[in-house]
Image (tube, rainbow, N blue to C red):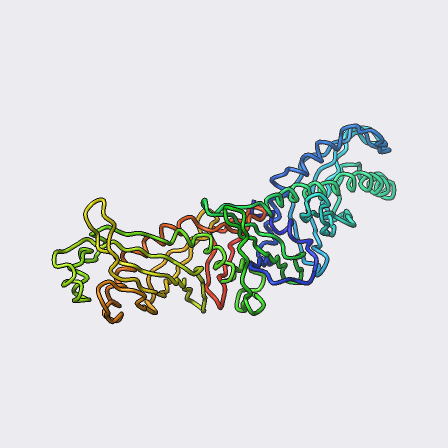
Length: 455
């Protein structure tokens, strides 16, 4: 279905853009993928089958009866961008027209032809979605062969063929172009549909404005809507500068660009899920999580708890997560509190040892699975620790830096990665398959280089 993508988008008009959160650029690499729109819909075969049927209001063609069309060749579709209008489309095909001729006997006319048309975008009044309509359809004969006797006068034959073909072909072929557009237009249906992010909320990819068509590509700008499960909309922050595709990609290639601002907004849906309580004594490669281990970093703990007590750790993210991107590297900034408790016997609440304000970064690696953007993180840096309260007296936060750093990597990062497995939906646009995309981290954005070529 990928191959229909270009035809569906190629009639887009130029308008002024607002600040989008995502951009989709479709280039020359998808020009040949329209082929399957006609192949899969079997439009030409259907038109050929209808050619010989009597229809109300259809006048018979003089000189030929029992008209039938067979041996329709696989069409070859060539497209070129028309800036600000859409595309110019040429369908090359061939077929055999048969029937009883005016001189008696069976007649065959083998034709090779081109169908040309301009596809222009209109807006559906009911749905507001783009819809495409062909204009100026013409049928151009490339070659004609017939089994009429060679001793017939050429002028008579040519006049007959010209008259016959100009009556048959336009009514047969031009509706095929319209029918393919109808087939493709249905693929817009899910464009504005809400897509879930687990149980946390939804994302909708709403068109910022009518997309832009140039001589080399067309660009679709989205202003995504991110809503919490309760229906509250999370506003995209101002990116501060216009979102643009970086240079360096092959001319005619296709890309999807997701801004760091948009990814930040999506992650806000998961903020509450990043809050955790950890009470396991054994975590990954860490030493036992007890007051005895903690006393190796803060000696005062040993005085307060001569006998080892299990540790309970509570992490709360109190600011929205933020994604930043520099070329080749993406970070997830988390601000929050880390509070450690000494566990007591059953039925008794644990005792708070200290409460720390913390800021740390996680390095993000991106991938795509089942057309959803996935993230996996690892600890990049612990940027700051500041003591807010302590029941064990004053201590230097620096004493805890290595302990907290190891704790975050072994105990907290796996929790974050479990939450991120929900994935974020990508634009559901005409069955684009994102799973083979190559991912590039650029300044303030993630670029998916789409593989839309034929197998």
